[in-house]
Image (cartoon, rainbow over all chains, first blue to last red):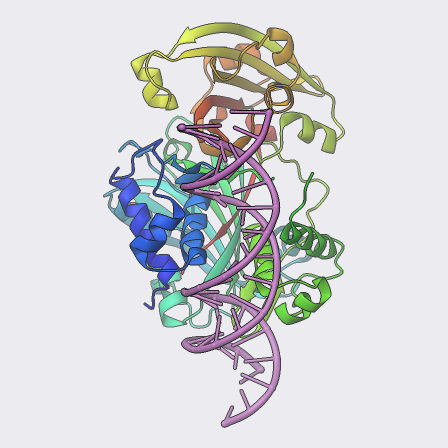
Length: 240
Length: 240
DNA sequence: GCCGATTTGTCCGTATGTATC
DNA sequence: CGATACATACGGACAAATCGG
């Protein structure tokens, strides 16, 4: 993994913020100080700082400095969302993750589905349906559609592990951008059948379009979440 | 409004993408071409492109070019919960927006509330409860807490219009960063009383911490949405 | 209120590396 | 292999905001 200089600086500062070495509400050392500390140019420091701003870790103030606005998250916080894979989420929360493949077939995109998903009519797709278990509870129903042309050789066995692992490591394709839409729907009979619905009659639906490194749409996914364990976090920064 | 050069270039390219002058899946002119076109330096073009990447409009590919991945949204799309304010959403969808203030008081942050909201124990806060109506339906229950010290002179009358208008235009305070968390909860008796709950027994809760230009937390808000009209959109880009 | 020092914001030019075709 | 295109990094210049004296 070749690491860019700015990326190292970014991670270094990030760590120090998380360790509360630079505590909440304090000011970071000035850019000039950081330049000396990391022996680099101003642009390089500024690039690292820009990433921290995007992460919601700090906020820059012209003429004043850079303020830390990161607060450590409570340990009860459970995040599903981000481009994180299901596996990564499970590991981070120290939970046992199991995936069961409940459907695996090939379909052709209809006009209607093309409009919903962003694929073109007639595209050949893998349709994979999987149930995700965390600590024995069926919490997420994933319905993935992959462009067959881009994901050759997919099997139910691969789907039972990590499709993303296969795509990134075996096929060597890189995932770059992902557009998401979050809504709430009534639970369908299928949801009730496959998920441990608990006391809710609805599911949180995260619809996802994924683009590969060539900028081509190759995946459309609906993740239907049991509401109890759904939490999505986000940072918004205002543009001037 | 003083406009930076990169910002002008950003908007110019964005417009051309939205007009499908640069259509979906096409490549933008190369950086060198854009440098000539806009008579600027490489850094300036790249800064504009970086913003378009962050917006999910384009995706850069080393050695190949910059691909447009923006697709025009269907006009049926209805978003509450994005960056837009309630008023803006209403206007865009040609709906009548009404706000009713149901509570307006001063409270002191308890230890427990401080932990939840990020304020400090003992902080003096305005507590404002408002119901948002769209086309006559009560869809959102907003519960705002403002640091009194930072938002002096707040009145129920101002709350009935736009508090943000007051903060930004009258007080001249700028809002910079906002941290959001989206979860789903069972509807409480209060929700049932104040909102037109429709067929759902739950609400989508958007919890929000807002920081001003000095990097200080001055607002904590819970927006409780009736699920029918809730939609949240988002772009995620993966880091290398 | 002014001035100077400090700090971040914008912009430029250049050089080199790396991926694609 | 060379040409093209984006990625990283450096150094310098000036603008704009803030703060203290």
